[in-house]
Image (tube, rainbow, N blue to C red; front, side, top):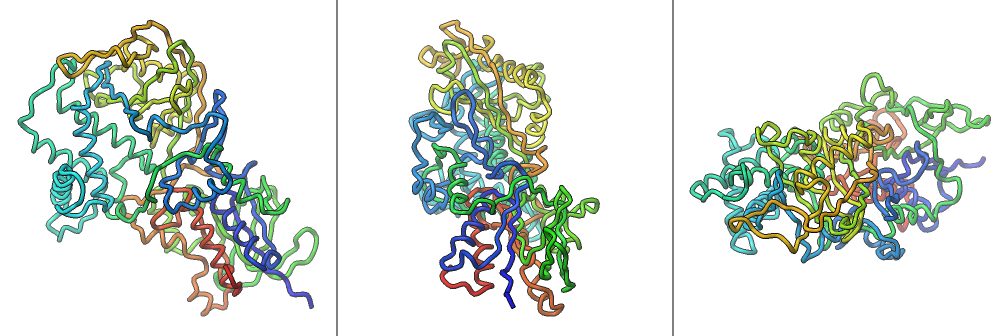
Amino acid sequence: MVTKKPSIVIIGAGMAGLTAANKLYTATGFKDSFELCVVEGGTRIGGRINTSEFGGDRIEMGATWIHGIGGSPVHKIAQEIHALESDQPWECMDGVSEEPSQPTTIAEGGFQLNPSVVDPVTTLFKKLMAYAQGKLVGDSAAGCEEIDYHTKLAAKALKVSSTSNGGQEKLSVGSFLRQGLDAYWVSKKDQEELKGYGNWSRKLLQDGIFAMHENTQRTYTSAGDLLTLDYSAESEYRMFPGDEITIAKGYLSIIESLASVLPPGLVQLGRKVTRIEWQPEGDEVSGMENGSATATRPVKLHFCDGSNMLADHVIVTVSLGVLKAGIREDSGMFNPPLPSFKSEAISRLGYGVVNKLFLQVEGNDCNNFPYLQMVFHRPDSEFRHKKIPWWMRRTASLCPIYSNSSVLLSWFAGKEALELESLQDEEIINGVSTTISSFLPQPHKLVNSNSHELCNGTANKVGNSHGSEVKVTKILKSKWATDPLFLGSYSYVAFGSSGDDLDKMAEPLPKLSTCKSAGSPPLQILFAGEATHRTHYSTTHGAYFSGLREAIRLLQHYQCIGV
């Protein structure tokens, strides 16, 4: 009698899926121990990693950064495959991450803000976020004197936000930040008003600068509104130490490296799974595959083309957005439906949309475009520029993707990101051009940074001494929300959820206790992906760790040695 090999199917050829496949296939001495297959609903590998080109430059439509190089598996792979250097220009964002590059902060109406106005609010925001993330504890926090001051402000904000119920009421990051800003204003109530900023008061400017940083934080977290971001879970999130960098040869080079060891045909593209049948009560499944009788296996996958596949184990690496859609009553993605502990965790966790907008510009001065930070009036302000579209008002910056590039980049989160996906290119170009005109008042004109003179020692309405026009000629935008294979960008711990829900996301089905009591085959459905990692969710390295975790879980199940 021929003993069948365990059949393992991985759904999704992104970072988590290909990491799992790579580990299962290359595990020492066990290359031929499994029937292994990766099924991908799209026409490419990479998932939310999608390297592309625009204006002759290499760009990232999805994952962009290595978040800290110290201990990052992504950085290690990039080093091994020599992907950190390239002859082709790429989205290195050197204006963002390298000193002495400094952003040019301009308030709506064209007023360039002096660092003396911007820096205190920027410092306040950074210290509040550091406190929320557990990086500052008490009044003895190490560092410059300013840290103690802002730590006290953050602690005061936390105390104010708590209730008399033992201070245990759940908080959002958004409410915590705003309490911190209110405490700052109380401490600065006697500060002098500014002159030379038109209809901007000091408090309005500080509020606008703070909001600018909040909008940047929304793109970091994918929370469309920071009021939906859970405060208590923020300190559990972990980043690697060291620089945050991009990958010169593209993030896709990491994916291609992971996939390069897999034999042809192991990854099947265009195979979208529509339903996953599994056996929580131990019922047997048998069927026909490719016209031949197959041994009984507990999981049956149905594909959009009407075909099906049987497996002993399935590693599901689809996005949290797809899982959220999959647990709706009308979906039928899982049959029977997922147990309540799993579906409730999926429901509670946050999953947002972040999109990138690339703009090609031309003109004699286009290579001098600044790293522009934009401070907007409140949407309900009588002083706002009426023609700036609402979806531009919560983007924080517009900057070249590297020094002197003619390709500019802006980030959008939440409902603005979703709106961006529905707009025609011409509408976007007009909206961006109108915005630039308000910040660099002569339409489409750039600023000569050497010609700035401060008005009253504080600000100047910026113009262009060269008189040359810069024109937006074409755009490229990501569309993660409306892509049915992703339905968004990445996960966050939403207000009312917790890190425990991320752990529940990672639990395989059926539960071990169910397997023992009902005789169900174990490890039928395993879950991987960034939304299943408690401390590194929302990152590519979190997805990597999760794929490795599930591969090792199966190797240990089959008592494979040396995993």
